[in-house]
Length: 208
Image (tube, rainbow, N blue to C red):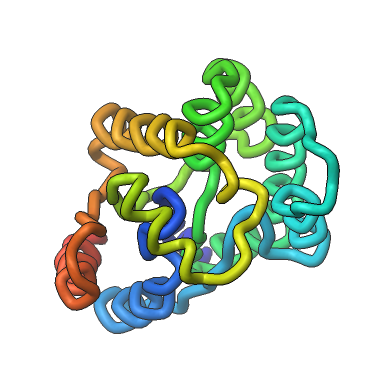
């Protein structure tokens, strides 16, 4: 029977450096752990989930209710799990996901102020007992992250939020990192690119 693969997620506020370091993290995992890595992202990862992502980040649609946003996130996640994440894990691959359910706790919970218990109910409904094995948190002050994000092109719907929103998002991430320290690995993303990647090497070298 094939051993279930590792499920590793990457989290952080806008501009923290998650996405640009995905290829480096994948390479480190493949070299250090000798595993096949399946990179993916949320919301997204499958055709249906990417279509839902388009609705969630669009600047062209009217503002949606916070509950609708949360439900769309979990709808995309349910499809993502069914079509990509669970099959890859069952085949023994390591799944490396740019954001996952912790982002719902941070953005819809911390940022929007939705009930964390409500998000936990959705988590159990959609995921059962599946949780990431490790979560790498790119931590940086919201002001720094947003300044970096402005250089990436047109801002999406979330990036138009006020700084207070992203401060709440960051605080929720840090709260989860303390409460679930056995799973979280924190990267100081305020430093230079080379220093961030050295931290990543050290973190990945300690995974099993």
